[in-house]
Image (cartoon, rainbow, N blue to C red; front, side):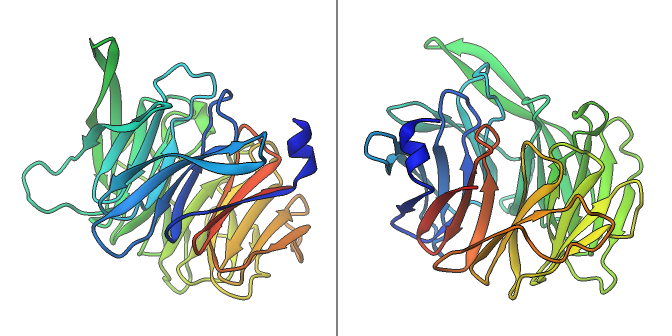
Length: 342
């Protein structure tokens, strides 16, 4: 850690618009690089790539590109060793892959599995498989999840062109699907879970797609909005209901019964992020301006209080824990991106 990073605990970046989606770069050679997406209720949204200028100890915008609808999610390719091209993915009306260079960011490919219609079913989220970065999964309001395969194709102008194809599309829920996440269980390639408007968490295996397992159903059939797997122990995942003030921790070995409820928030929770380096730490953030870090190793005993709390200057709509820099968390509120040293 540089002397600069030791000196400051919080860095702030003010964007030209309300920030919604955000993602930390995973590459070891691009520390303190994030992508953020705008939330503008028109057909002219933006994605900006920002990096920390370590000399000046402030964020600088590196590039910006157009994105028609607001990004529902942004993710950098999970490629810490820079084996693959430097790619960024966004979801909205479609899944798009962008190739990032120091001088510009350009669209690499647009993945659309609805070739027969002028209409598209918007994508609510997606996940990029960490074990096999050639796999991505998307969730949609049309009740389906789609698993995409990427291939790095022929070389044009000394650059390998990346394209994608549908590996499988499945009806995952009875209503809209709001989130999808690959599990690290069983080798980390084939298992994924989804949540949706029917209030259930369902688990799938790419090798046996004829059936799924219901891990949890909300007792009041409230829609479940987010789903997040523990990064170190694939038995645990966290979820939350739309407009809910608590986060539920589930153990896949004990379906349908939450092992913990984190309920100190005083307004609805908007984001969940597990620590990348610890199986018992999780961060939650919400409309009460609070980002809370919890230690859950007491489970199944009740988890009463968080171990750390940070109050932002606005309603936090997004929280991300940096995979390659586990000392840092990012939050977004209003027009602001903040990174916090934990």
